[in-house]
Image 1 (spheres, chains in turn brown, blue):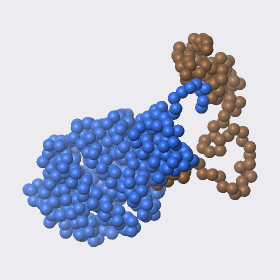
Image 2 (spheres, helix red, strand yellow; image 1 turned 180 degrees about the vertical axis):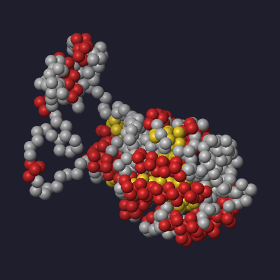
Image 3 (tube, chains in turn brown, orange; image 1 turned 60 degrees about the vertical axis):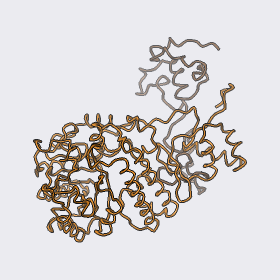
Image 4 (tube, one colour; image 1 turned 45 degrees about the vertical axis):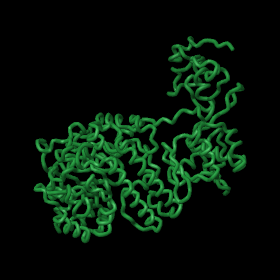
Length: 119
Length: 483
């Protein structure tokens, strides 16, 4: 930061958080040259995209079994646009249809109550 | 993100902070993060432009670009947004999450009330005086803690200290030295247990100084026991309230012993702890007597805890006078700190340490969390001030901690519950103040101590100014607070 100078320890931590130190130009450690698709190198490892996550409902459930499978409709509706930030196939719930899932308290049970939205 | 819809321009506004000036520079104390940032001229300009209310980014740029240039203004705006000094008007106010500590939060300090008896009869005493919370005359609890209870307390302390490598054991009273026999045995036992557990144990005690025989002083020095002497200053102030039961002042009796303590006990710094009252408010004189004439390493002050109608309660004008003198001493502290010299005014040093670390408190102190007090019968209380009070018990060293009561207490006393504190910029450091003070004043430990809010804000501002000036003139001094 050019205009604010961190004075106390908390300010320094905030600065490191909002402005992570630039990696040095020193030769890279061979171990660092691994290509890790879509992986954020700062902070915890959060894989992005459903193809990298065993989301229950896709291939196997979180326990490795198949008991929780076959809920494609609600998974599409909730997993994709909530966890994967892929809102294309659902209505705009911020502006246009804020109450779209209002009657759907539990997706597995109530998904049929989700109505169509007409522009 | 563009929605493609025509919307109002995005407005920026100031978020929560307290600006202060020190050493000719301007700083921001951000709330609730407790971060301190130095501002350059463009950032100060941006904040001043928002003094009168929210403005759009473009309006700010238009206003400030002639002075600083468009690129600089936009960069400065970005930085202020990132540290949350300013933000979108549509952004929700930052809530202080009511997160409770994990259930096995380790105990750092245990205060052992080895006796509830005292050979003095200080008028303002919160244990025996008019505002006592435990009926010390009819109380069935033993006057002296037994050796067995003290040993169980030590076991309790180590058990509760979890993975911490050091446990701190503080002896308190009554007059601690009235139970010297148990002190000796407990220190030896705690050392033995610490050795077995591969831990370290640190000891301290508070005394009124009247019972400091040579044998006791040598024992304190040999065992590296930190000593705090409760003393109110020069003779006429000490003798005002710190009296024997027959009304005789304790200065002449205690002073030779205190002087011997200061001469002979060189293994740990010795501190003085002063209770300020309406009648004994000469802070600077008290400080110089204790620090310079007697040679205490540190002197700390606290206003008397009392209901407001008592004759010794400090009234509003008294708080102003106290603040003025605190400021005078803080200025002196600053001059010493700039020259890397030790001053000894512990009130300012403790606050500066918290400012430097960026402490933002969910609870005003560690009571019931990292610190607990044990009464003579082994009951565990929030802190030493509540020791023996059944209403504030959170377990017993014999039967263990009552986690349910402990967490009920913590849940109820979180700063997020104190609505009065929610708009105060000093809350990261104050968090509502002492539970015991609130209990005595308002009959409720969960209430913020509203009677000294103005005082706390003024004093915190003074400490911020001292901190800022040290940061400008001698930043190396602050490294001692980085652990």
